[in-house]
Length: 362
Image (cartoon, rainbow, N blue to C red; front, side, top):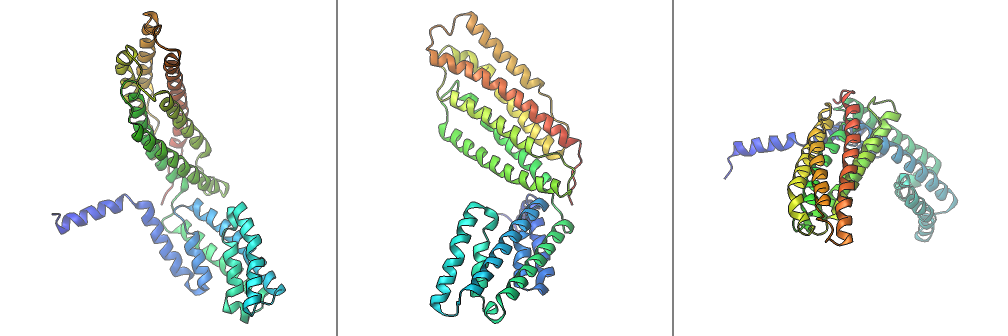
């Protein structure tokens, strides 16, 4: 049973792996303290728009402000146009307010808070005491104050750049792809683990979705001149292409190749898989640490050995007894590996771009 000291060390180590989350917690707490004098709308706004990165806070601020402004203005107009003191009038006012705002929020995610804001305008007891116009203006002012406080906190208190999150997420994603590549290439010479392949396929798809979200935050930082880092979009696009290459390999490797191809290709494919995984892991480290990318020499050598073995099998007539679809899988495998090599090289170029720009993170 672990001692108290061991548990304490384990807890400290766990916190060390959650630095981004700890930064967010500190910034939210400071935003909460700074926003207290401005009323609860300002407090809620400061907490809501304080995100894990500056770019995320910018996006949340814009979305929150647009949604609140639209909901408050429309809710105020409904409050002025429809008497809503009684249950019947309130019900009609809520329907008139929520139907169009709900439709708009379904089309544009920036208006997600608009229906809630309109309901608060109609239901708040303060809104009944003040005129709808004054109430709406007060809410807009408070939202603005909360947004400014949250942005100030994100910029000053332990600022986290979206580009740093982008490089770290890319590193984790590339390690996943390396494991995925080894598993997929093994399926050409042995019975495939379809459950494990599906699991990694889903995991890497989620990673791409996460990477795309972080890239959007990074774009906002660049557009706001808060970052000099390279454009994040090529990283996402090229990472997606590398994943698609492995998905293509997975589709070609739904069953082991028949003899003698399976035995002849087991060793060269194993070398390609190991060299590919090592390169992707090292490339991930290059992104995370902003260092020059690794060499593709080992992967190229393994790929040349694989193509040499294919040429030998063709020369010896080993493919003649095989069915057309099996031969097609062999050549699809070679094509996908060549595509993977090209896209991996392009991704290494993106790592070089990030290596030329030192990380800026507080």
